[in-house]
Length: 110
Image (cartoon, rainbow, N blue to C red; front, side, top):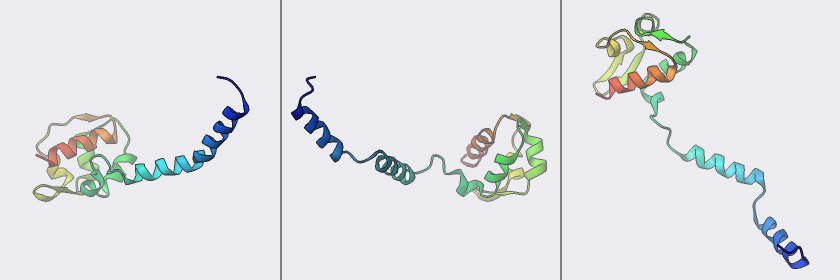
C-alpha cells in the first residue's frame, strides 16, 4: 500500500469514525449482560448455589446430603430438599460445584 497523503487522510477518517476501544468494550459488556444465562440454576437452587461454590471438592453425595440436605430446591413437582432430590441416586463423587449443579438440575427436570 502506498503511503500518500490521501491514504493517511482516509485512515484518519476511519479511525475517527471507529469508536474508541473503551466504548467498544462497554458495548460488548452490555451485549453479554443482555444474554440469558445458561441454565439459570440460581432460580432453582437458590442459596444452595452459593454453598456449593464454598464446598471442598471432590465430595460425595452422602457428604452433600449430610451438610446441605435441608436446602430447598425448586423442582417440577414443587419444592423439595436436597436430600429428597438425591434420595433416588447412588453415592457418587463430584469434582466441582458445576458437577453437582448438573446432577441436581438433571434430577429436577425429570
